[in-house]
Image (cartoon, rainbow, N blue to C red):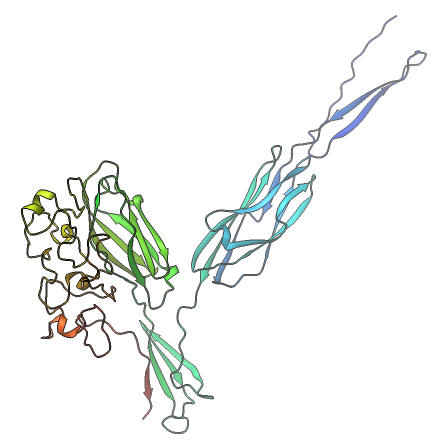
Length: 441
């Protein structure tokens, strides 16, 4: 007689490795007793986590690494988790994995430590992500990292410091000024003491003049040179931005900066098939203050044989030449001097047929900060480049600083630079701060 039955087996979800078991059935007197059935349960799905989930390294002097911080990667579920550990994000190069990076293989409930440090190379907030990228059967996990690079803002020293002056024994700050006491200074008698006054405010960055530009439709402008500087901030830490007043003609993203240090370049690409004018404003920031320079960019359509921005018909009916972009060889294209391109010298324009519009003895291009003339048409034997483009005089005012002397009388060799023995034709400029020594009575 044939008898049958059902055996029900229950099991819990597997969070760990693969499991194997068996069921054995024994029947008295049965020829094929006992009977064994093998049971198998696959390993669980890995689940990896990184802890802590975020970390702020705080402030750290640029150029100096922090101590290492340990992060823990754990497989909290079944199976074996595999993958790799790396850094990602905008400032990934400002952080460093010193241990535990690269590939990993973690069985259930196994962990590994990952060591990371913050190594800022410049000032400012830096962010990155510590990534644990799991393979196809493992999940991904990450930790957010941040830190702020700092730099020495200002070091105050006594101009006549000596042993046992005790400079810095007392310090007081009010607004943009600091007073530092040195009660052991003997300059005015034994332990007479001194107080040093310093200006500690921020000095704004500077940017050289960028001259108006003329380019043809569908043609990027050649790299335009300019200079930036700051008395307190390294040039590589200065931030440049560009803005177009006519984004249909020149979208802001088509303003691209290049160069390094003090010497920078800007390349501007007009939108396809667009013509017209736009004012480009270049701004340099030291993180506190800014300086800007604006110039007019004109995108033209031929016929303009010499490419100076003036049509051949205008030039042929006036004093400029249609086959010479710089008729008077002052370094400035005719169409920049005649900015409204009408062939008439207006009160706010320099004369494209007169190398020295205001008659002060200094060429227009030199006064306006031009360091090089037109690529092909400026006669370099005649043209005098400006040897100090960070300062410029007014090409429409023979006495820029109104001191009774013409610019050419002050800049005797007419090279745009204040050389030894010359007076400065520029208006009075602010002087850098100078420590003052105050002595007790």
